[in-house]
Length: 329
Image 1: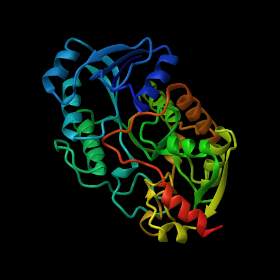
Image 2 (image 1 turned 60 degrees about the vertical axis):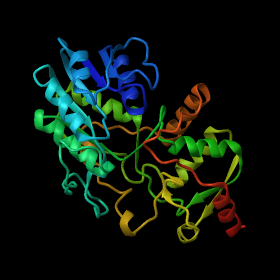
Image 3 (image 1 turned 45 degrees about the vertical axis):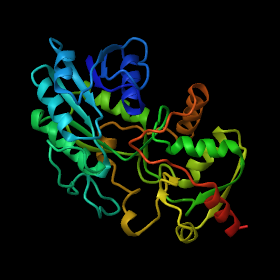
Image 4 (image 1 turned 30 degrees about the vertical axis):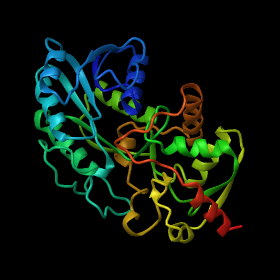
């Protein structure tokens, strides 16, 4: 398989490359060459894909069996790439997001829930519209494109700051806030499992849209945070703070308390999607202990990643944590 990865130095793109190399595939990555080194064995193409002329020049005369595209900003960039690759690549895989759905998806919601309105030739607006626009851009040129809609993505090379923050906090030790109900489901997908699903699907010639998260209940807040504590040497003590107290404190779900959202209200179906299609199409979910341990091993080896300018800073401020811990002491 001759695979082209657009990007490839960070998180999901890097995971796809590593999985493809392990299969013995011929892998090429196209990126700006400024955010990190590619794994050994990858053919490097340098171009800023927001510049149509640079992209065309870098890809001139080249053909591939498949392309993997995780772009998350202006949909017009996906549109330009897909148009340029039409007739020169067999399959187009686009990594979208479960955020592409309209709000209000209930518990057990699946791929039938309507997506947000978006345009394939738009500039960057909001994340959910950018991802849906990227889908439409890929499907415009490749009607049989493979579109995966992952939810929360964790694992090695995560440069968003969610699981790395929890691991760093646990490594400091002491009493650590654990939010909400311990058995609250946490639906996520390990980037390595996501990469395996994409590459398996490309090898099989699959197409269509699929939500990509672990089954509801596969992981809970308790199992995630216990795995984090174990991976970092059992130096932290989990202190459970109920949802009402957490919200009353002003702590922000998802950002200040990464991977956690309250139950009910606007978040009712957020961590409880129907994943039957993902399972039927081959998604296999590893244990959360593996995700936490492998991510900590990577952080210990390579250091914590530089904060991405396009994503918010994650983590609970010390003053808020102190107040929450005092509320249950």
